[in-house]
Amino acid sequence: MQIKSLTACEQLVMKTVWDAEKELGLMEITQSVNETYHKDWKPQTVSTFLARLVRKGYLESHRQGRVFYYRILVPQEDYVREAAEQFIAFWHQGSVEAFLASLKTDGF
Image (cartoon, rainbow, N blue to C red; front, side, top):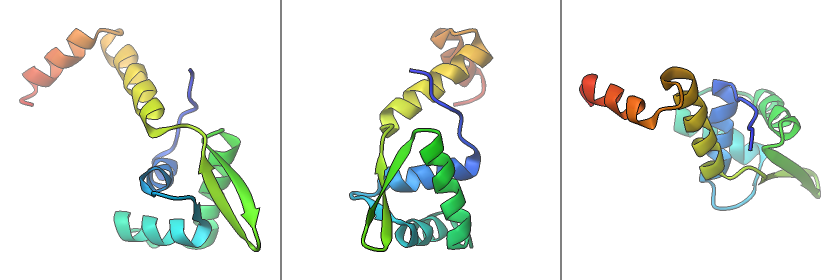
């Protein structure tokens, strides 16, 4: 599976959706992102990030009445695994051992 990269802002929005125990609407996502990550984003800003996440295939939206809700298409575990593999491939030539060794030498 090849995931599309996310910006830092998209990651905050996506993490908020992953952490929820139900599908969320725009206002719930905006409130949660602002409270959790100490942001002051307006709904239009969050809506832009959500639209990008839908285009990238991470979420799908569906309408219930006047509210759009967002459903997860890429599970958090898949994203984290792929991001870790890409990080190790780039920084440590794909060697998990080299990655772990770098953590030990840096005081972790």
